[in-house]
Image (tube, rainbow, N blue to C red):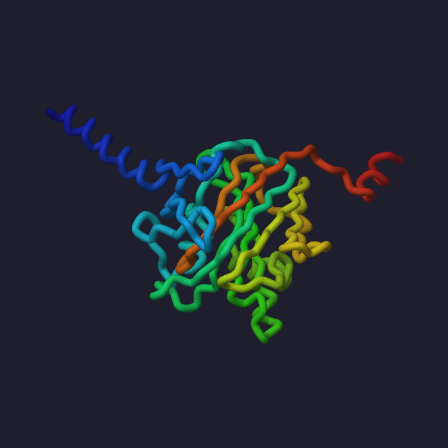
Length: 250
């Protein structure tokens, strides 16, 4: 009887894990595994899109402990590629604030995770706060883009340990409109391009994560409904910069 109970308990644990990390959604030719988010393919503005929201039952949020309960394992993992290191990630995304909102200060957090380790213990990220992208306040605009590296360098830790603006920046984005985000990942650096702009809006000169390759994911956070489409991932070999070529080829 005791063995039966043990097996039954393990079975229940397995079910819970499946609910949090096992449900798959197929969108076109791409398959996504949901990690503490709800997701479905819906019709939105006349097109099929992937709708994602954070699952607060699976991963609770505490506004009194912001950094410990945001920028975490709440995303949709693209299962098609598990070894992304360098290259391009591009996606079209649309951010709305939920109504009613479980967190009124929410800024429509939406973006990308990349180099995600198999067990979700490490990854890199660049995401947007569209609510402040065009606000009439430059200091607020300077927080429209955020880089972070899980688990050691979330947003508040970066603000506390590095000069202002080192890992945040501005971008001409807003809620309730389609945004094309393109990331160019190369070694320790990352550049973000928005819409059809010729030049990048944001540069990470030195990423801080130790995990160098892994999965790609679509991210939303508290109080945000995110719509995604046209995700494209292109892997490339490391590109050496002109500066590196001069130093290394002497």
